[in-house]
Length: 103
Image 1 (spheres, one colour):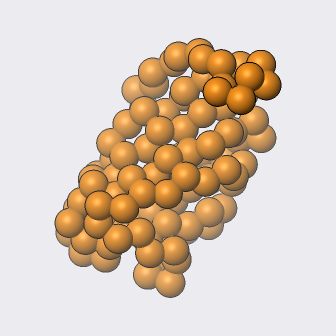
Image 2 (image 1 turned 180 degrees about the horizontal axis):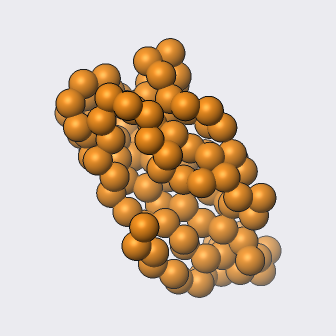
């Protein structure tokens, strides 16, 4: 996984340093794939379905068609320390991930 690292101060001025550790587009097929590994220091993660079909997102377990449905063009921001997994309803879909950790 290619990583981009950047440090910034959050807008609420809590002075918590943040590192962007994943800034990548994944091609997600009909089998569950891990997008973000579990990390105790993980902050917010943006999951954006840039494909043309629904993508199912799961936290801490393999994604199935019973997982959270993220429709094409929609995104969500989650705060979780669990791994984030996804699979598509059909074909290969582009899913953009932007995730941060706190050192």
